Amino acid sequence: MDGQRPGGEGDMGDRGDRAAAHFEALGPDDPGTVAGYRLSARLGAGGMGKVYLSHTPGGRPVAIKVIRPEFAEDPEFRRRFAQEIRSAQRVQGLYTAPVIDADTDGPHPWLATAYVPGPSLAAAVAAHGPLPVETVLLLVAGIAEALQVIHGAGIVHRDLKPSNVLLAADGPRVIDFGIAHAADATSLTGSGVFVGTPAFMAPEQAAGRGVGPATDVFALGQVAAYAAVGAPPFGEGPSHGVLYRIVHEQPELSDVPPRLTELVTRCLAKDPADRPSVAEVIALCRTANDATSLRRPEDWLPAAVTAEISARSAAPAPDLTPPPPAHPPTAMAATAGGAAPYAPTVQGTGQAPQGPPPAPQQPPAAQPAYPAVGPYAPSRFGTPPPMHPQMSGQPLPFQPQQSVPGPQGRKRGPAVVAAALVLAVVGGTAVYGLVKDKGGDSGAASSASGGTVGGGAGNGGTRADGSKPATGSDRPDPTPSDYKGVNLTAGYHLTLGEDPLRPQKGEDGGYELSYDTGGYLDAEGQGGSLVLLDPGQQGSLATCRAETRFTDNVYVNKLGTGRQVCVTTGTGHLGLVTVRGISPEDSPSTYLTLDVTVWRNGAAGSASR
Image (cartoon, rainbow, N blue to C red):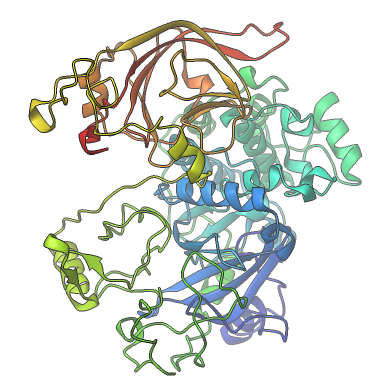
């Protein structure tokens, strides 16, 4: 969707009139609340849904993005959307708008990001014309820094374009990273509906080939040219014509300022291998700035754009009256009767709850449980962002207001949980359980365990002599199983509990390790994770147990011969993958040749599995 883009520019009179022009009143088809967030105004709409302004109970503005019903009805979209949101919540950069809350399982999927009081690059250029060269250099360097963080989380944006770049007083903000991936495999896009703007696609994207970080670099070159010239470098018009020019013709760069020519030209190379990395993009910006440091002044934008930022900062005040009582759906799950918004809790608003209390035999409804400190609403979906640590200790997806089991089966009430949360934040330390859930079929992940009983030390339960294996600190390390020269083809997966270890067809479905056709190794099984070891770092059972630089996927362009990846599965197995080769360009198939060592039930804490 087109981020936090407003629906219209309106009259640029006094500040109040300008502010009103950027915030549309809610219409009869717009909801009044979304999962306890009372909506104040409509910010815009795009290919994937509508965007609304709301506020946290502390008054911090947030942008609520509600996904279109057509996508919400597609199970594959929901699965990928959940996966991408989990990845996006790990992105915490100076030039990104953090994802702070989401619901991917409800009748109307949505996500909440920090509100950025500034126009999109598309709106700014349309209203005020091309930007000065110095502004473009700072813009591109900021976007490149955002891409470094996004790619570091294992995400390819796929839809970087001017409407997904917001201009704030202290620099750009990149939004909607990774969301286009969720729509790639839906029936809508399969039938020819584009998500995103064809004018800003890369050649490999337009041709339906695999995408990677270099895809975003190509889009960044197009964004740079657009900001400097006011038009996309491959022109406009019918989508098929634009896509043909992107794949087969050279861009029109005659109007690009000379200081930007090298930067834009290198980013727009047809071959992804010829494009600069995002780090090289920043260096090119520095070179174009006469090799001096890029320093972002307060007035880095033209005065007319700065005036728009001031207008958008005057967002409509939050409505403090509680929403009408409703039957609340369980968070992250649809109710049988459909979608009914629910009111924030007493803890969140200071208001007494309305409506009859739930029946005693029913657990409390899952509602936003806001901490006493901190500007953001806690995410009810997956691991909270590192910038806003919170305590959950619950398997994903968790229910924020339900009682948490304590020692000896006792239960802590909501007040105790809230008190613990405040102490954790004030003390500067937060401890929370990280339970990864890639949104795949949990049944598939469970069946992959092979029915291990007793947490055996490598042989899955009882030894051959009938004795029970040791547990805890006395449990011996499992015997490794080595598999040499495994050819893992793109679109296939491995299940570490299987012996012999053989690739099976399928890349999406809760698998423990798959080679996604998007160009990355993927650990999507429930509780699974990957760690890319540093070059020269020697992998071992001890190394893989100790490493905590977890990610969900590792792109192949980061791998070379000898590079190693630790794989931890939700079923308690641990593996070490060593890259021995990558398929040549003229190969009829795309594959990785791997040596795989598996320690079955060797993951830390697997003795109880």
